[in-house]
Length: 109
Image (cartoon, rainbow, N blue to C red; front, side, top):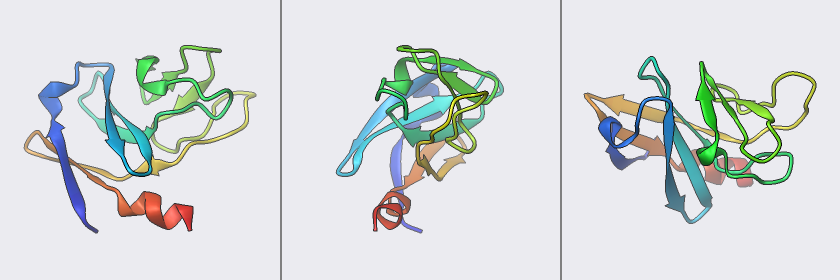
């Protein structure tokens, strides 16, 4: 995989997110309270809300528009809601963060 540097884990607050703009759209990169890092598309499958502005809890994010809860691990809506966003592989090397953008390209084909 071709890994693209996107910054440092310290750029993202605990239980927060930052956006990365790519040719395939915005990617939301999340940091959990346990310092785990996840990357998913930055739009809720329900109405397209900005997931990067949602509330991070455990390994999920709650969309700020209509409270859909999305798993950061799988990209799938949790509970009774149905839908999903694509997840992007993310790597943490001593605090330096990298994402694998070709996973988005492969999924689009």
